[in-house]
Each structure stands twice: as structure tokens, then as C-alpha cells.
Length: 180
Image 1 (cartoon, rainbow, N blue to C red):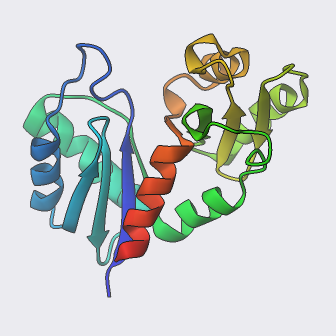
Image 2: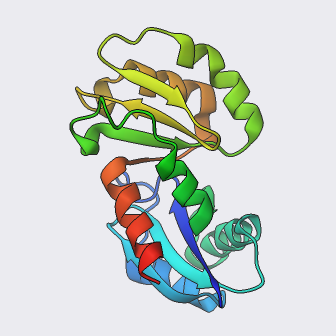
């Protein structure tokens, strides 16, 4: 049986830059040979099944196809369903976050990023919170992400090496993978 993967594209359909229709994105992923391709929202979230490929291989293939077929350069993060489940299970901020639209999860592309963020996780952010997991940083932004000091600090530290989704979106993607 094929594995379920979630692809998260960084910076797609934010403002006027990097516009990609989800129908075009689904077709692109299908043309790469992946199956059961579904998208969520209009912000570059794709769930698909694949055999004989790893998450890094799928990410590289989607990134390359985006440029070659759609003329859009975007970083693509791909998680296997088990990785996504581990990120969901490790969230330490669920007891403080009462609005999951303002609970953000920033994906970490490599272990070195986690080490660079250790000092940020130790800071006192007042009513906001930042916690590190193995593959993600969790940020509670009660006043929204645009006014969030820890989210801004993460963005400055990680730059293009991350993408983020709110908890509601991540849970929907997790459920889509579980549906099978």
C-alpha cells in the first residue's frame, strides 16, 4: 500500500506573488505519478499517496515541477503521515491556546534549525508562547500572527527555511491523511 504524504508550499497565494490555482497544483502532483491528490484551502496544502519515494524526494520533485511547469519558485516541505502525526502529538501548547486559528506550527527543515532556536524558546514572551518540538516550533499568538513577537523572531531566524500553518489547518491535513 502507498504512503500518505502532505506537501506544504511556502508563500503560495500570499498577496499577489506566487499565484497558483489549486487545480493546477493538483494536476502537477498527479503528473508526477502521485495518486489520490487532494488540496486544502488556497494556500498550497496538498495530500497525496506515493509508492517508492521518500518525503525529501517528493519535495524536490514538486519544487522542480513548480518551476518548470508553472514558473513558480517555492520551497516545498513534505511530511509523511507518521511525521505529521508526531508533530501533532508533540504540541505542548494545546492547554494554553484557546483559539486554534492563532496557534501556529512552524516546520523545521533540518535539526540545525532547532539548535539555533533554543535561545528563543527560553525567552519570556508574556502572554505569547514558543515551544520547540523535534521537527516543529509551536507558537501561541493570542493577538494574531501579524502582531506576534515570537513568530516574527522565528521568521527572522529561519527565513525561507520554514513554512507555517495554523493548528486548524494542520489538523485538517492530519485528518485527510488518516482518511486513507
